[in-house]
Amino acid sequence: MKKTTNQKAWFMVLPVLLLVAFSAIIPLMTVVNYSVQDTFGNNEFFWVGLEWFEEILGSERMHDALGRQAIFTTIILLIEVPLGIFVALHMPKKSGVWSSLCLVLCALPLLIPWNVVGTIWQIFGRIDIGLLGYALDQIGIDYNYTQDSFAAWITIIVMDVWHWTSLVVLLSYAGLKSIPDAFYQAAKIDQASRWSIFRHIELPKMKGVLLIAILLRFMDSFMIYTEPFVVTGGGPGNATTFLSIDLVKMAIGQFDLGPAAAFSLIYFLVILLVSWVFYTVMVHSDKESGS
Amino acid sequence: MKINKSAIVMIFYILFLMLPIYWLINMSLKTNQEILSTFSLWPNDLTFDNYMVIFTDPSWYGGYLNSITYVVMNTVISVSVALPAAYAFSRYNFMGDKHLFFWLLTNRMAPPAVFALPFFQLYSSVGLFDTHIAVALAHTLFNVPLAVWILEGFMRGVPKEIDETAYIDGYSFFGFFRKIFMPLIASGIGVAAFFCFMFSWVELLLSRTLTSVDAKSIAATMTRTVSASGLDWGVLAAAGVLTIIPGALVIYFVRNHIAKGFALGRV
Image 1 (tube, each protein chain N blue to C red):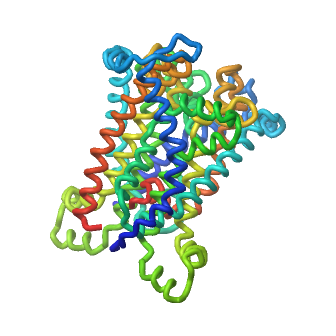
Image 2: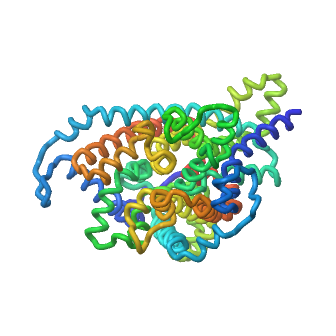
Image 3: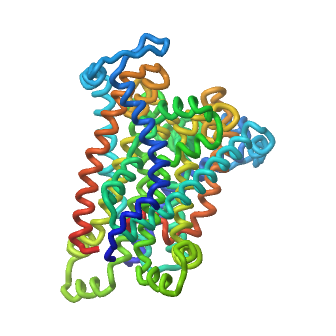
């Protein structure tokens, strides 16, 4: 659609702008303010320049949390995206009761409050009362997510796969449904293999939605807080202390305002940078396909 | 043969999704004694006591009421400010529109953990700490951008000729917007409202940081119970089941648009 140029449209955007400025810019300014100052209490602040940033960038705590976060995000993207595409390819194509049922049931985990997701898996994984933990214990696997960091990681990853794979499924499914039947018929005439149908028809059509799915999964997994907080509380030790958990510990638990603020800004910048790359690719491919 | 294979994949996937939820429901229908003493796949001694605890104890059902209050406030605020903005983005070019649109998305990327402490100080200093409106305003951080993006996606699908015809027919802008345009994108408004509701409902960190007693959300109530006594699994499971219900009820109505909503209106 061709848009007309109209500078008065700013007035329609103004309410959003004021509201978001209040709830995003003012707090962000507070963070910037803290990140360059130190205090001895009594509300007396003095300028320390980039000291906090140097301290945080050089601190092992930040490196470890960032490393854990990067590994976690990579693992869940590697599992969720292929699994999501695989399940979407097997979703019933004709609309009907069965397909509605599949859609609704698939979407259900996405709509459960995050702390309840945590609670569900906290119960499900316990060896005394949870189905998963009990079953694993019965077949002789040593599994205890509160003490063994490997088990804790597995639990958190399986939980995230359980929680969010459906997002990839739903988006891929929406992409697949937009492929006209004629494409499949042409492929049939050409005797194309299942793989080449996927590679040359389905995958290009899904590209746009898959980019969105990856962008969303990256963003959300990078700020994961609630679920690991409820299940493991960041433990055992620091094994599942991801960036957000560490930040909350620092800012609200220990009230180290300066370092926490510097941490926040670095954290936000990392997400922004990666998301911006995804977004640019997304807009670019949008233009290519002409929509 | 092919259909069968697909059905098997789907059944396995859905089974994987439903088992933990089933287990939660199973737990919520058992007594604490049974949970801790015997391991069984279904409740032997069916009881609704856990639910009764929630419906009779004000600290529990109050949590639900508080959550619903701020979630509804947030949904109303988000959708009503997002409507004109989304219209502007979908219809007009103006200075800085693309940057503004991306900047809105960056707020969706902002980790709530970054904002928790500044929000706490901001709302404390204006005297709004522990009120519903504080949480509602805080959640606009990610819900307003979401609503703008979803609504813009739906509005792009409405041909511009409709606007022009309405003006020729003598409608004022507000008359057109209310009588013609809003009904056309009714499903978009529904989806945007649903997603604002959902994302405000599922959020824990900000609602827990900004409330203490009067406006304490159900999510905060649940996590605090875990840390305090940590043993009342039955009641905890029942509380969990009750938080799933609103989503499960509404999801049926938006099932055909749900992918569009999760994709921020971009499908």
